[in-house]
Length: 131
Image (tube, rainbow, N blue to C red; front, side, top):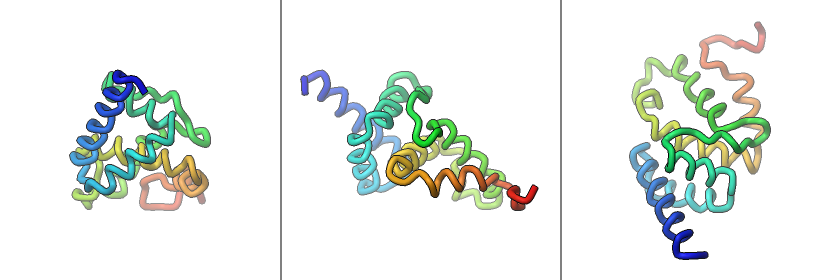
């Protein structure tokens, strides 16, 4: 690894630690997330792009889902959690992003539970599968 690459990885490491802290995550979670990211070229690219541009690359997908698909799925749950303000990601963009990266990493290992949730959970108070 060149010195330039090491600096880039260090910058990303510090960036994800900062985001995770702002998201209310502890250091153990943050370091675990980082170690899993190092084993996922696609998720690492998503983080690097966001770090460099402040927007989403969305060039990596797991089981047909991109990072923004996961974020939208989380945002959709605001409808169901409006009365539980502390649990909402609504005003915590860092938390949305960090949680979405974590979900994407989990989906790399076992996408089925997340695919099922994303297809079945609409954020409404009623079962949309029967509509």
